[in-house]
Image 1 (cartoon, helix red, strand yellow):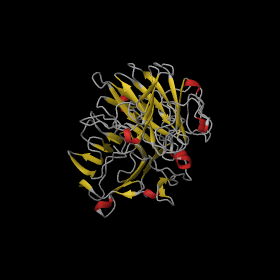
Image 2: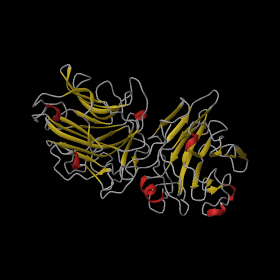
Image 3: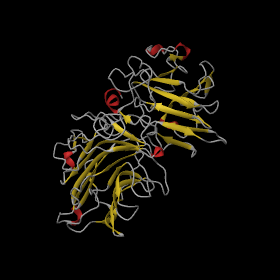
Image 4: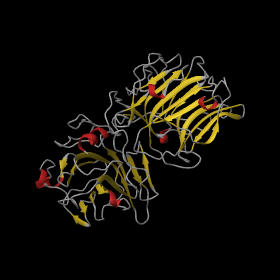
Length: 475
């Protein structure tokens, strides 16, 4: 399995500070019922999305936006189907589709942020321009299903019924799983995709702040607060000035994130579990293995890999589930392994061992449920250090440089390696990874020297969070 390279690694003039994390396992969604219908012929939806879910079958739909009158009799929606990995736009009324598009293009990159801009304008005299979909600034023109509305058709979208973000309506309530940021809805205007993004000098599509009118039912969701409920200064508050606030449903735990289109953070790669019993949740930052038969282990790797620089992240042990949980880093050539007992990985096992290059040292302390393991990876000096709840094992000193004082396993395998974070769980083992975009509560709060990340323990001097801005500078 090749490494997925993170997208949008360059700075832009417009910064997006937050995103919203939606967990389909918690049935999370945002809802609002418009007081009156807006334009049902002309409107625009723009949103940045980072997907998490890879499940298939009848419940496999990552829904960006949906609304229904009663059950399935009428509806308007657009979403990614994880069963087919395609993007779908639909408007269904009176037993048939007057708008139905399914892309031939597949969407399976779970490391990158995508920008989706959908422009609806049934007043347009050109049939194919009555609904236009742009992904990262490029118009989609290849569809397996392609049905456009007749001129001046009143779509079901933007009426005075309930609207949902993060789920479909009706009885088939499939939910979105992943991150959303910078959600714009423009009522009455067929805005241009370039109103929300632009291509920089390096050919990368980057966010741009919308500066036009929003219209009566328009809204802008920045996810700048954590308060649940509906109204100003809440998680789903409308900051466009129109006051069209959404309400929160089933939001608990950590759902406001700093992972964003302008600073993309590492997560775990759901396309690369080594066993089918492994599962990912909470924005691909939680990893669980329920395998109870040989080989017992399942390995998960990160979406970012490094060949130089100094990097720090943490792992919280939610449930150990046995004596062979291991946390560490692995060379990208070892993706097919189940654990760290191969030639090119360094893992800290919960039974009190370092595993590296096929060898084992019984030097560190054991760890168990509730403990936080810190990982400091020094690719410049080919060393890795581990701490348990803030104290580095075997008197390790991540700032020791070429002397590699107290590093696990001494020098890493080779002079020219590329390594990625990895965790191997055993039986019912469950870990929550924190690459700076934490999903569990932090009691102290520590950022790196660039001000990025939120960690439980101090980031060693010279080390940085695994995020696109740091990779652009040090990676």
